[in-house]
Amino acid sequence: MDRMSPLDATFLHIEDDKSHMHIGSVAIFEGPPPEYDDLVRMVAGKLPLVPRYRQRVRFVPFDLGRPVWSDDPHFNIEYHIRHTALPSPGGEQQLRNVVGRVMAQQLDRTKPLWEMWMTEGLEEGHWAIVSKVHHSMVDGVSGTDLLTVIMVKEPEPAPPVPDSWSPGPEPGARELVADAVRERLVSPYEQLRGFRSALRPSRQLIGQIGEVARGLRSLVGLARPTPLSTLNGPIGPHRRWVWARSRLDDIKTVRQAHGGTVNDVVLSIITRGFRDLLLGRGEDVDRRVVRTLVPVSVRPVGQTGVYDNQVSAMFAELPVGLDDPLERLQSIRGQMDRLKESKQAVAAGALTQPQGFAPPVLLATRTRLFSRVPQRNVNTVTTNVPGPQYPLYAVGPRLLEAFPDVPLQGAVRIGIAIFSYLGGLNFGSTGDYDTAPDIDVLARGIEDGLQELLKSAA
Image 1 (cartoon, rainbow, N blue to C red):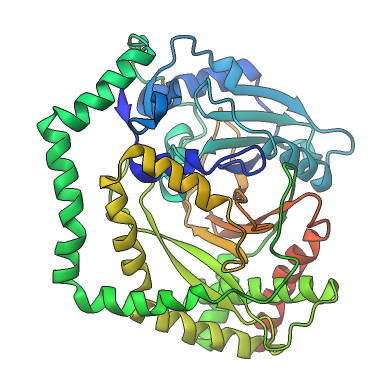
Image 2 (image 1 turned 30 degrees about the vertical axis):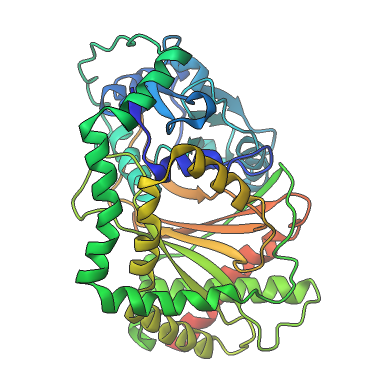
C-alpha cells in the first residue's frame, strides 16, 4: 500500500456527483488510425513505468487515515482503453460533443482512475485519443511527463518495457484501519514525519518571513467577493467543451513588441474572451475584473517520474472593463509583476503545508464542507502547462495537436487550460452545460484577442 499525500487526498474528498476531479486531454493524430489492439499493446508496454495506472484507491474506514493506493487484482487494460467513433461528418463540433460527454462521466473509484478513448472518424482521416486521469494521481506538469512516457519520439513503436507485475495482496478493512492506526501511534517514522511537517512552516517563516508576510498581505484581498456574475453559481454534472488555437511564435511576437512575458500575453487574450462573453450576456463590465486562480507548479526543476500533485497558486484579476487591448496587456503585466514580487504563491504554499499534520478525519471533513460553501471569491481557473516542443508518435502516427481539459469545482462554471506542443499554444475551455451554452463566444474572443494584439505589434 502507498499512502496518499494530503494534497492528493484533497482532490478525492472534494469530488461529488457534480464536480468530477479528473483532468483530461484530446490528442489528434494523423491518419490512418492504428488497430485498437496495437494501441492496447503500446500502452500495456509502458505500464511498468507508471505503476499507479494499475492501482486503485482504498479508503480507510471512518477516515482514520488518508486513502491508499493498492494493486487492482482485477486490472483489465481493455476496460480503460476504449474504442469509439464520431458521427458524420466527423468535424470539430462532433469531436467537442464527444469530449464533453466523456469528461462529464465520473471515473469509477473501484478501478484505477484513468481512461483513454481511441476515437476514429475525424475529418481528413485523422483520429484522436481522449484521455482522462484523476487529479489525485497527477497535476498538470506530471501529466505532461506521463504523456511523453506513453508516447515516443520516433514513428517506430518502442519495444515493451520488461514487465513482471503481478498484483499484491488486497488489503481488507481491518488491515486498512490497523495500518493507519499503527502509522499514527506506533511508527516512529510517521511520528517524525508529522513532527517535521508541523515544524516546517515555522522554519520557512523564520527563513522567509519577509516573503511570506508580503504574500499573506496580498491574499487578504481575496476575502472580498467579486460582484454578482453569471460566471459563478450552482453547476450540474454535464459539460460543454470548446477549444481555441494560437501559435507560440505569435505570442512571442506580441511579447517582443509590447513587453511582458508569454503568460502575460496569454492572460491578456483570455481577458478579451471573458469580456466578449460577459458583454454577450448583457452584463456591465465597466470597471469590472474576472478573478482567476492560476496554479503554480512547485515541482523541483528536473524532477521526472513522480506522478503526484506539487502545486501552489496565485490569484490574478483579468481587467475585462478595459476595451483597449494594449491597456489590458499592460494592466496584466503590471499586476503579474506585483504578484510575483508579493510572493503570493510562497504564502499559499506555506498555508497548505500544515495539512500534512492534520488528522485524516479532520482533513477529509474540512475539505468536503469547504467545497460546498457558496463563494464568489474566484470566478474561474486558468492553468498553463508547457508541453514538449518535439514531435510525438503513437503506434506510428504523428501527434498533430493537443488540447487540455480542466475540471470544474464548486461554484466555478467555466475553466480554461492551456497546453503547448510543437509550436502550438492551444486553449481548452470547459463549461457547465446548463449555464454556459455560449462558451464558444469565449473561445472566439481568445483567438480575436491575439489577432488584435498582432495587428498592433505589426
